Length: 164
Image 1 (cartoon, rainbow, N blue to C red):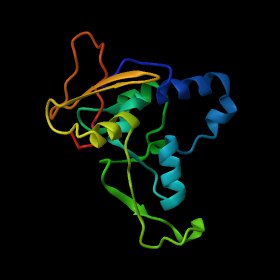
Image 2 (cartoon, rainbow, N blue to C red):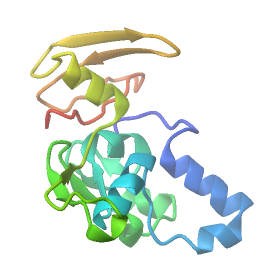
Image 3 (tube, one colour):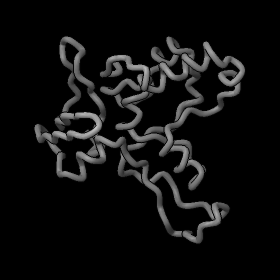
């Protein structure tokens, strides 16, 4: 359902760690968001996340592009904690006046996960195009128009910033 192997670096395992090791902090949770989404929240007041980054939280039904009630229940994450989902290119709001920034007409989009943003930036959009990124980590990013997972669950299947 999530399209991904459970890794400790994803959000759901981190929340479970907080629940087990810092129960008082866990009880204080009101919203779950990724770092870029926190910046967007402070700028716009919109609690949002794009599908590409949400794919790495282990709480998203990637094929149906919605939060998975089943995964949230398993991880004891309340659905009301989860942000509204957007395509990467969708406008989530305008910069608020109370930010101290004089940008009344500046719109903010949902953004994208790092690999999805890099893929779009290098022209990896549409079915079958591929990007290989080698650096601190290595990533092979293959764009597909239709959601697919491999039989052995050895590959990640994230939503792409191009809307696919």
